[in-house]
Amino acid sequence: MLRILKQYFPIRNMVFLILEGVIIFSTILLVTVLLTFSSSYWFDLMLVFRITLITLICQISLYYNDLYDFEIASTIPEITIRLLQALGITSIALALIYYVFPLIILDQKIYVLSILFLMVFIVCWRIGYIQMLNRGMFNEKIIILGSSDLALDIYSEIDRTIDCGYTVSAIVPDPDQKDFKPSIPPEIVRQKSGKKLCSLSSENGINKIVVALKEKRGNFPLEDLIKCRTAGIDVIEGSSFYEMLTGKVLVRKINPSWLVFSEGFQKSKFKTQLKRLEDIVLASIMLILLSPLLVLVGILIKLDSMGPIFFVQDRVGKDKKEYMMHKFRSMVKDAEKLTGPVWAGDNDNRVTKVGRVIRKYRIDELPQLWEVLIGKMSLVGPRPERKYFTDQLEQEIPFYSQRFNVKPGLTGWAQVSYDYGATVEDAVEKLNYELFYIKNMSFALDIVIILKTVKTVLFGRGAR
Image 1 (tube, rainbow, N blue to C red):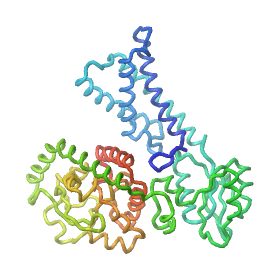
Image 2: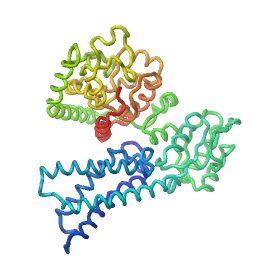
Image 3: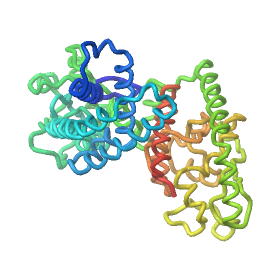
């Protein structure tokens, strides 16, 4: 497993990404060889640059069309449709680049034939890879020690995610759990006692034990786990494993001691200053580039309905300090006059015609770039909420107050990982992601979130 941005990714998945890039590059080079003649293709730096550019843009298009999400793109029809869309986007992007830089144009015949070859090669390559995932080839085998809700959550997450890189080979329930009968396949070994874990590991070729016991006092198999650890078997606490596996924490299932002693939550002066510089630079650039769009949206809002252009409302920021947040108005004037403070719902009849469009593509959030620029918000952070809701949620959700240790964000890990939420349970799930971000926040993670935000905005996902 590779650790990237505080999450673990199967090496197999990284190899897949690289090999697919090699396939795209090699296909274009092969077509070039078939249609032209030269004795030094590899020494033609311009040709290598042209093919590399196409490969890079093609893989970005594959990503933005969810072709690297194997829960979505897992069948031949789905792969084919999304691949056609990705190659179409690649062609459009290249046309724009070639218009500006005509010297890097690749011969049209070579490009067209390459597209045809890529359709066949990529579909076949991906179907073969998905078959490998379904068979669990090269997965790392693990033992789950415990029968807690967390243990079952870990098993369920591994069972439903075909590219997580793990296979549960054995489950060892809590010593006092006599009626443990989860719906698991018969090939998974079930051990009645927490003893002899080393023997169970060696018999099944297992090198990782995930500890997710209900109660760690009394019957905790300390000696056996020490023996496993000194024998070279990786022993990892269940909450930490779940965090690495999913990119979130379970706020209702973690112990306070885990938050105290686990890695993360490091906020050095350098990291704080770097994040502030990131906010100032990116917010300034976006405000300048998007200024024509901001003016156009303001005009459309005035033409569409009565009321002000901007919607101003209180929000709770860092250290629970309240501030006034600005958005483009997407609802009718005085929308909450009769209902009071409520979360927006599906097909909310308070939303205007222009409002539906700007909410779908998150354009209504753009005025908050000013709050980012002046320091009330950050570009990336937990979603800001109203005090009316935060007071309620702080009483109902454990660790909810920890989100006030950082500035709220225009976008965030929760926003790109989970759809819009309008219930307390949705708020819990959002906090699971937000706490992961607060624990592992970094410049690199911010860049990943911004790139994911672009994907979310382009396809208008998760808005109401």
